[in-house]
Length: 258
Image 1 (cartoon, rainbow, N blue to C red):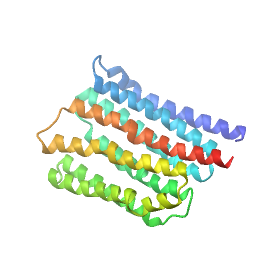
Image 2 (spheres, one colour):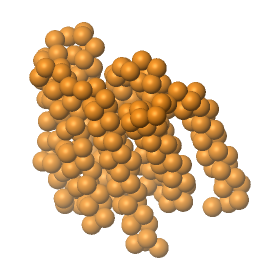
Image 3 (cartoon, rainbow, N blue to C red):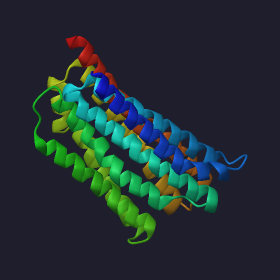
Image 4 (cartoon, rainbow, N blue to C red):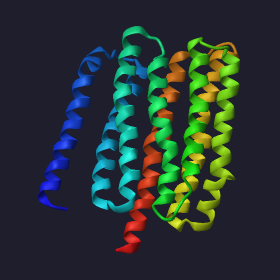
């Protein structure tokens, strides 16, 4: 790594921190004592910002075929960090759930997370592009009807059912489909471990969202404060830990070749 590259990345990291900080000052001033939902928004936004810097710097250090995966992980946390700033402002100023901002965040970050399954496999072997497209389409089928149901554009039950089909389609691909078979037959132990952790994150971690939808819209409603705290904490696993699983594979593969 050259000195000029280090300085360039240090400037980029500083710029990201300043951008996130400047967008959060006003919201920080509005946080009230005892507002644990607001605290959770603040906590996760800072954790996402820190994860962004980490993934960017590790992308530069590790490089090679893993640079793309780690950069995408940084994009996920960077996008989510900005959205959390705005979601916190919505909460502390109105007391309402920031549903629109949350879905905008998911529409950008969830496809990137799904593409990571494809990217970590391409880092070690040749993979069919159809895996990429199936995972991408599955995320859109899961998210778009869900948003339309929550926003009132379509019947909430119909939106829920279609969204669940999209989620089940994704689970099939990563547990029994082509992506799963490639991971089982051609992945190295480190990549195989990361792939398994990632697919269980999509199974267990993501289950929070359909459960929130079901209890919030189909089962008589739920407490918005509790729901937002659960959603916020879930993103520690679903975005930050997910990226760390990818980093683990990249780091282990790099050390093995050193």
